[in-house]
Length: 429
Image (tube, rainbow, N blue to C red):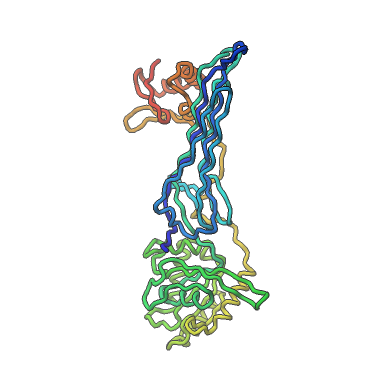
């Protein structure tokens, strides 16, 4: 199965149902008056974590998700039905970002967790809602409010307790295959593992077993933090791990120095994320059965003492030293204390009270005026400009908000074009 962990999609929430313009006409009911009902609310787009998904592959050929619109209002003050939500299933560990702004909308890490990503529009009001002492028989009703439309970037960050890092071909896949039931591809060439592999490790005696999830992260190389090779794609999956097991080739059989390898990989981790670089590391000196390993082990012991980390000489191929390593990892997990999330690289946006009545006026590249404002754009979208009474109501609100005066201050002239949302008007004094 192909592993997809980063993809862009588009979601569209449902538009609210239109309000109804109707009048009550029943025998023996004098002056029945307006009786148009409100439209139903449009459906939300909701993301839900599903246990049966472990990759974003399903989104490769299905990139547009649209919720249903609310039902229109009807006569006799009948309200339209609210539309059901559009449920989008995602794997555990999915980070949802707004592709246009970079805003983090949701971090879905728990099974069954849900998040409303795009809200449906409210239903338009029927003409019965606009009746008052000054206008007892309004003939207009509102259109439904458009639902939110968002371009999203989905990133999957695997949820593992332990991440294995190191250069290609240092024995990460061999280690995972020895201590768990996972069977990653193992061969004598670099980048045999091109996607992360998860394995469940059992620790302890029968009846008192503990388990943790170990992730085989594909090999890192120099420049990984800058995207060299598949650097960012690989490093993303280290972010959620609690403990890092750093594996080096103690034999140096490929001509690399294991001590230099350790510092180079840590440099890439630090350049990518300071938080990852501060994570607890356990150093595993692999391939101890090969010539040259014992000589390098002395230097690795000096390195471990200097850096204040644990060192375990192992041989993943034969199983030598793996029990001690796994027990040390399990103990480190028991002592793990989560670090407060102060990552500078990810900007988390907090909900701020935006003034819906704020109006800004600018010009587009053609020199035409563009009037922007959340409440005003919503009014334009929900006004039926085919109804004279609805147009008069819009003009009244336009004057109350002082938009004419603001446009005149910006130097607008008779006959110039004004844009509000998707509508285009010709300015008349």
